[in-house]
Image (tube, rainbow, N blue to C red; front, side, top):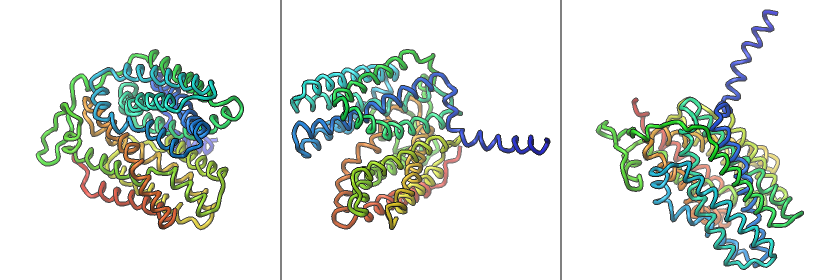
Length: 422
């Protein structure tokens, strides 16, 4: 009996460590925010697919679809100088409440347009553009809000879970959209997204009392040479980020990775279609297996403190798995690597997010989170052109090697300096 108890006791710490990624769910404020993010994310991904299908149905033009997609994501690139300052100067919860209402109303407008059966393309473009404006504040806003919902011990778990929720949305949203679009029509997809924003607004309005942060008495970030603290100030935050070695290296590496690595839509579709002669169903399977790994990465990739060295290791893992997937000789092996690659994606995103949060003064957090998300999404359209050209001119395998090597180069740059002494 003693041996059985001892064995059980020895397994308990391992089980607790395995599920450490869920510890932030014990905090009521975060639990409400997390649930709303999952439902809203599924709705957004559902709307994205429905928008693509609707535009193709209305125009029969891939160029028109490209224009609509550019209009949706252009606000993130155009508004980033404003986004960060708004998040730092105003109550983040109120900002997210405003964008939540705007997103829901816009989705409802798209549902009304789709229900007519002959929506004018210009009206769809206007609605999608307005939705993009709201979205430009949402992602950095959620990450900026996290320090007010959980304490420092729970923050790595919260970051991992929010990152994993994006993978859940990426997995469930298109599947739901495909079902609704085929059985009910595009208006149902947009309507579901509108309803999902109702949950977001309710969750934000009913959040328990948020934690106070040092934003009410600004903290400082390290300077590179003198050892003197760098005071947070006005402006876009570029000078502030540059003077902090951790912020500078993390944000520059993240921008390069966002540009040349985070083009998985292009790479996965090209690999399956041209390298393995797979069809649309196989492309969907590739997305799903990658997303499953990303969810697991959010649950298990939690540490108390994230250092530049740990972020560099996450870059190494991401680069190595992308290169391995690109070198897979068969489709079966390619699909087998994708869950590991998905896990590496989430581990990298969680690590770099935590590093930027830990290195930022609370008064500058909104601007630093905006720069981080700009690196993820603002540079991707530029890199997509280059990665697509490499896939056409050389091969999809070569494109994945370039993407993976980018991560390895960034890992070396992150590890080049010694960790800053506390």
